[in-house]
Length: 275
Image (cartoon, rainbow, N blue to C red; front, side, top):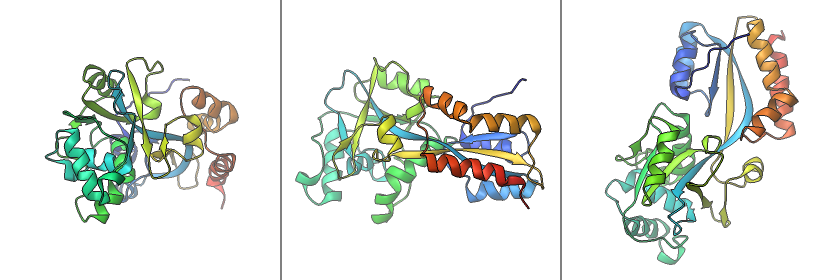
């Protein structure tokens, strides 16, 4: 059998899915209210399945050995809406000290010099999830816009994000963990401190939720009014949520959900045609 696979990003994927042009949408965030209305308007029914775990990671070049860990406040000060005029690590430190109320509580020691940030655009579920996890809590608390900095360097692909980080020791990139190159010989990830110490992103810390920027991954599968999917599509989903399918995804760089979460996903899929 043959499947057509496209990778435009979660938001663009939902546009195709709700227009009836795709049988499955793999998403790195849940469907939004607006997208749900679009699906309802076009008559697209679906089943939502949680199929894996991923994380958002911050990248730096291997040549930048001064940024090994950032606190959640430093991540906000670097990437959030209040960093619109900040172009140096000194500026990031000053805003962080204002947020925490004390320079001594601002987090790991930062280097000096310029800094720029690159990452995905608005079509990406990675960006929206990053905003929810890393920006929204402090933005709401500080009564400011819930968005990334206006000069966020949008890159159209993960490969270009990695390349920008690789060629610039002053560049921090934002990317999904599963999109990382398998050989981290040109870039490295930055640990995150949410108050309990610096935690590196890895299969164990993502699976147990100790890495602060962990997220769930989803499948949205189109079904008819009786909950039936196209037989070929149903067979593919059956495989994807089988032990073999989950093992394949894990081997490719993903992190498996807990056994309870896997059981709940299988139960949801099995119950789609139940009266």
